[in-house]
Image (cartoon, rainbow, N blue to C red; front, side):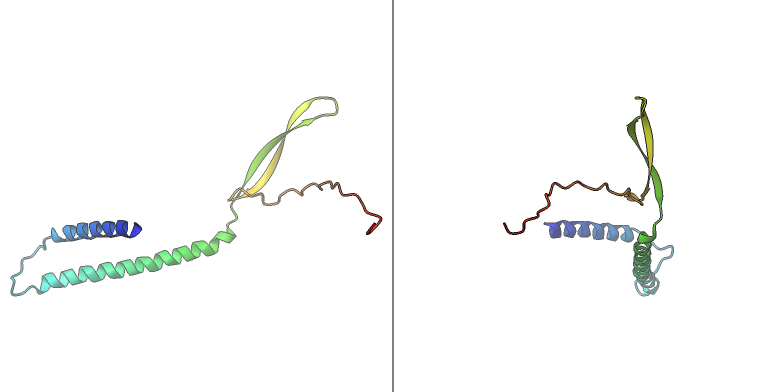
Length: 129
């Protein structure tokens, strides 16, 4: 299914390219006996397009490589403020801010330590009985 879709798109693109280039007329006239200038321009345009696309591919690949290499060294951070409620010893309830430093993906840079989890395991004193 994808193959038919891509064939249609490539066919339409090729037809449009032929129509656009076929409508161009040179600023000079030639005779059928000396078509050299027209052929030279057509070959030059084709070669220029191929070389331009090759150069664009090299530049695009280089920029992608640099972006991929630089991604781990991205030090973009921002502060996220989280509020929690605390009850004071005299009975007042207040909102206390907690500022968390996060990286570009929203993960905490220095996460707070996790509190120890209580276990319900009973110590065994008699092994095998």
